[in-house]
Length: 379
Image (cartoon, rainbow, N blue to C red; front, side, top):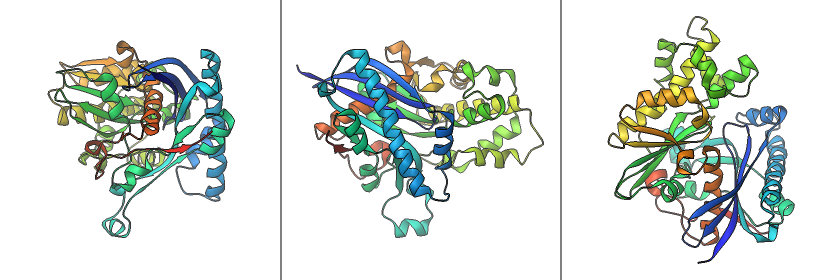
């Protein structure tokens, strides 16, 4: 059975940098990661990307420049992966490159009148895939979300089909919870069914608060959150957001759960100790994830956690407390480290694109049918 090498690249809503994997994928889609590399975003570039989450002056120009810079970051990850493995660019079948999401507005964010005027929502992932192909001399597959949006779907989350291929267990119902900047959930039924959606904020708000008050890009192991106490009334206010009550399919991002949203809620209260705010944000992430599992998957006994949140010990303890009598474990226990999962998914998605095989799931995004995702930029 023949196999090929693919590279998957992901820079998520956490805005910490680019994760990349080089994977070998056989003809049946079975994947084995051969190498992992990470290139961080420097603070100024991270701030520039954050500013593009909202409208501003000259944003078309700034977006184009940021897309070029994203491609250069991605190219550095590709170079590191090739160096680790000793492979040549010509030995890579394709690169699956997600790009950096700065806007994600599926139809759920539009008013009824806007729905009548537009057939689809929109999404924006910054990257210059032609430049990436030029820099790496490898075929690039990018723009994975727009075809699903065009078919009436949410365009996200994209990874549940991959989760099914990697984490599904015969005769067992398994939940896969990816906690990046935003948290998304995949439900893999014992009968082969797959569903998935965005739960709400993952690390994005905690990272913002940590950087603002401690100058640390994230709360290592959740130690700062563990030093505080959740503020009950603030937690209740955050938990009242209408997005959390929507039925799947649904997706979200920094368009909704952003610093301005948080500060608006904080403004309704007397000053709260920063550590207590961090504790509340950690409890909030555990709550929105846990309540979705309890609501939609009450009989699922195993929850596999991936993404950066899997390394936050306090968050994992809080999540386990939300889900008594369930096994909550890191994807690392199953042979795929948490920070490699999403990048591996885009290697797999590129594999599916080259084979002209569908990789979207209408049961996840709400699209009117499965579609081949991604656009190919030849080297």
